[in-house]
Structure formats: C-alpha cells, structure tokens
Image 1: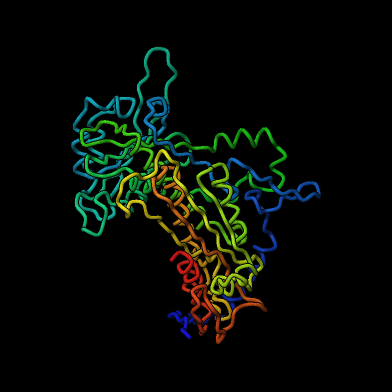
Image 2: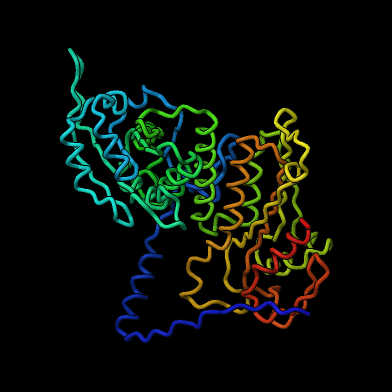
Length: 464
C-alpha cells in the first residue's frame, strides 16, 4: 500500500495579551451582529416582505455573479471616439517610436493630444524598471463647431521593460495586467491600446489584459443593501451608470491597428477563459460548492452542440471504483463528483492531416477541491485561510477548455474536473484508512490533507 504524505506547515503560535484578544472578540461579535445580506449571487436568498425569494436561473448568463466590466476586442472607431480615457501600453523603446509619429495621433486616439505632453509623460518613465511604470495626465479634447464641450480626457502611458530574462514573456505580461488595472478608471469607456509590435501573438496579451478586470465582486454598496431594491427606477438608472466598457486595440510596430480576425478571436477567447477562471477562484465556498461548479459547467455549454457533459456523483463514484474522489469528498454536505466534458470539433474544422499526433485527443485534468480544511488532519487557523483557491486547477483548465471551444479547435478535447470538498465530519476519511483508487492501487492515508494526489489519481487513471 502506498502512503499519501505532504509537508504540512506547523501551526503559527501567537501569544496575545488578554486585552487585545478581548477587543478582537468584541469587534468580531459586533460585525456578525450588525451584518447585512448582500443582494447578489444565485445562491444567496433574498428576503423581502417576509418572503424568501431565490434569483431565477438564466440560460444566457452563467449563474455565478459577474461584475459589470465588458471587454471588446474588435477594432471600432466609434467606441474609440466615445472613450473618456485612453491607456497606451508597450515596451519603453517601442512607445518612443510611436509617440514620435505625430501624424498618427488622430487615427489612434480619436483626437490630437499635444506631442509635448506625450513626450513628457514618456520621459518620466524608466525603460529598465522590472515592474514597468505608468504616467497619467488629463488632456483637453477639442470640439468642432457647435458640438458640446467634452470633459477632460484621462491619458495614461504604461511602459514595459525593454528587455527581460528568458523566463519571462518579452512583453512582461504580469506587468501588463498590473499596469492596465491601475490606469483604467472604474467607470466610463476606456480605450486600451497595446503595442505588440510585429513579433508577439495576441492570445497571451489578450489574456493578460482580461486578467486586469476581475468579474467577481461582493463589496457592499448602497444598491446592494436590503430594501434599496424597492427603488426600481433608481436602481436601474444607477446600474447603467456603473457599467464600464474596455475596448482593446492591438498595434504593430508601425503604430497601425492589427485587424487579423483570427488573432483577435484568440485574444478574446483567452481573455474570456482567464476571466472565467479568476471569477471561479474568487468565489467563496458558500456559493461555489461542487454542485454549483457542475451547474456552472452546464450553463457555459448548454447551447453548444459540440460539447457533451457527463457526471459521476456521490455513491456512484464508490460503486464505479473512484475511491480517491469519493473518500476525499464523502464527509462534505455537497457530494463529490467527477465532471467530464467532451468537445467534438465540427466536421468542417476537423484535422485532415495524416499525422497521427495531429489527430490525437487532448485530455485536461483539473483538481477541484472547492474548500480544503485538511480533513481530520485539520489545517491551522492561519493555514486554512485562502483554501477556497484549492480548486484553481479545475477553474484554469475549464477556462482553457472554454477558449478552445470558442475558437473551434480542430482537435477533440476531453476535460476532467475532480470536484470535492475536503471537509470535517463523521464520514470524513481518516488517517490510517486504506482506500482503493480507480487504477486498482491501494493507498494508506497518513495525512488527509494530502488529498490532491488522490482525486487526480482517479482522473488520470481514467484518462490513460
């Protein structure tokens, strides 16, 4: 029998004075006593006039909450002209060449900012800074004839490092995410222009930009408080004001807009996949149960005939020999499950090449522990915080799978999501238990907090 072990961080010992401890307990109790319910999310019940109301299921929008930041990638001069802010991103040296092309200002920005303003903003940035840098300024947009004056336009330049190590993307994609997020206002229309030059594909860059705008949000606002929904007209009006649009344009080395539809589609699909993965990872485990995760998968592809979904749930896992997934999740309120999604490409895009490796099926396997307490080998109070992220593997491969489906990849793809909650309860797997995985291998548990290899072992055995 094999042993499942892991290096577990020793609990953090903190000596606290009695007075400080009492203050923290008092503050905590006050927060719980005064808390209010936020009227968002599909699983949060709304209480109104003594009635319990559950938000209806939508067939066009995935069930888990999405914030109101929309991203578009198709070149559109009309959106550019409506923008209230502009963000220009690129390597420091390449930006200098673009700024020197003063004749292209109108076609890029929709107006003509003063060249000295752009040059000064660029000069203030360091082309060798590891994290890049940004500079912003408000500029006046001139109007023609009787047109109403436009408000000051926020113009930001985000300069990336000129050269990076071989382990990094040449455009420093992590820096792109941070700089674009910091330069983009929370409301209005923002035009983001990324100078990708002539060397880099748009897919990874689109993913980096998309990551700047997370979808999940549970912050309390005036509109989210109980009772505010009674003011329907005011609510609708303010909801419209809260919506923001980010329009992304890619530029080549000459400063011209890239209009390659295949590249743009790849950037959009990658951005959507990354935003989906981030939203699922950010969602708290009260909402993102194993059941909710499976429903999310179904709602994503319910109108796509190229994708089929199968599930093995609860006791059926035990009956069919998936001992890893079953034993890890059997102590939780929501049953463990193995969700299997299959994408069969349409005939008009299928690979016709004779090479067998080009026809082979691609399999993706993701660890989906929606919350990891450590089981009976319980984590410390410090080590347990953030364990909602333990399903990041499943969310990542789901986002990649969705992007591949949108792009109509000419290869068959199978996705396996091992969904379980490593919870504490009377049915939880115990240290010293011996279980049998789908491969037929027996495993002796000596640390129930080493659950990842158990659930993945079942799915990998199924795939192979």
